[in-house]
Image 1 (cartoon, rainbow, N blue to C red):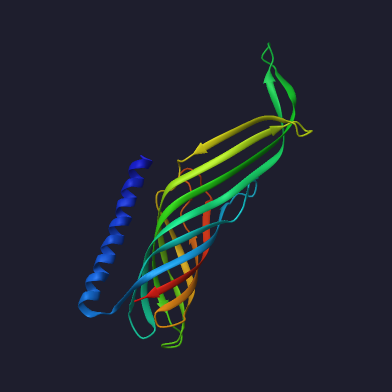
Image 2 (cartoon, rainbow, N blue to C red):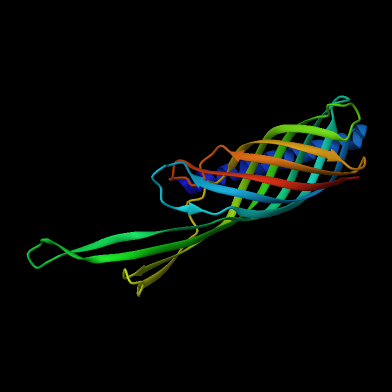
Length: 239
């Protein structure tokens, strides 16, 4: 069920992306109102679980992206911009630790206390994604270098990989057991989030920008209250 939904969602997003870029290419050929170029960026991202009791600590992750960019000036101060980018992302490194107790059944079926132990779990989540933001850009001062933008960003994640190592120790920190688990399933098939940013055009063709994106869907299909957001610093060049 989830697999079929994910494949259908990916086909829809890719269809929209290709259709919009085809339309803009045709419009450029007819009226020359479009600018095309490239954008590269680096991001600092944060994954978190919105549950106060959840013991895991999630470190900030990072990502890099590169792709094509298109911009169309609607009026003297408003423009519509979009990108199609490939992203490689370290989602997060996470960890949790503490003390717990073990119990077992005796020969009469009674629960018997076996002892206390210290546990420590560490993990890493990585993935790749295709990103497709659509932004409305506003220039406060006509023909000025600064601009503000807001819009929505879609993403199609793939090649998600998770690695988790669990260790158990005695309370004196002597290692009792170590296990490593790999998990490549459960990622939500399509991301969609609100995006807002600020940009500065160094020259008519070269610009820098910073953009904040907050994903509005859960990170995992079966885990509610799992969120993802990131801040990107980018450089764009238009022909």
